[in-house]
Image 1: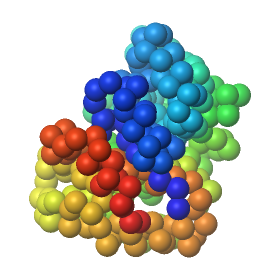
Image 2: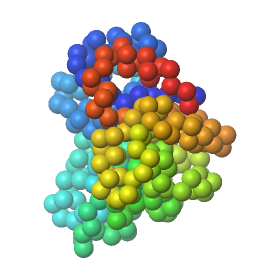
Image 3: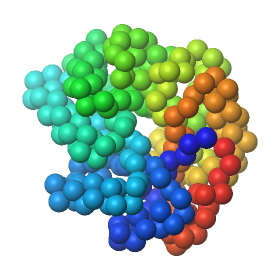
Image 4: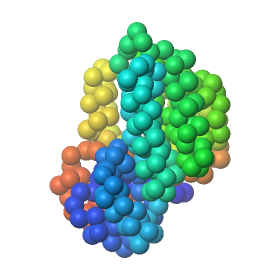
Length: 268
């Protein structure tokens, strides 16, 4: 089982952080939108570090609220997509993560989103970059894996697929039975996050948990559920990375060494 870790868990001197990655046997890292949008000098620094320390950038989250817009917003989206694709290629990043708009607008519809996602996939294809759609339950356009599967089928591109997020299952935002319907070859990445809250009563609580309460598997109440999801996917033939994604404030208060000890002891 291959595991990657999210760069957002580590702040400070990058040289020191990459040295620790090597010492702890970390080989794959997931980047945030701030990493990919960095200025040219910072981007080249990441390229240099990844080369010297033999670290592969597994995925980059960045294209948010993407697709379906018109006029100047559409032009902005397209230019931003080009920027992210060029950055991902320079970083030898394998997967570019995209999310759909989360605010309803009379100017946005599913067909426009499909068209834009198809164009995005076509732009990334020559660079051997996979485009992975991430479902957000509060999106009025792509708020479930069922709809995401329809979008993937409509886009119909070999490099366009899905990010599967265990967080949505443990929050009861998705039914676990959907795993039987999703084509395994279209799942490009699996994000693994735990949670220390057993009941989420509203969409607002779900959004808050997503943005600030994700935990490393084993630090919450749902480790067994996450392991079962990973086992199910592996049995179905999933062979890509399981990405550890957490954003709880508790992780900023512990040393990088203790954090890496925790990450290296994860059982999925």
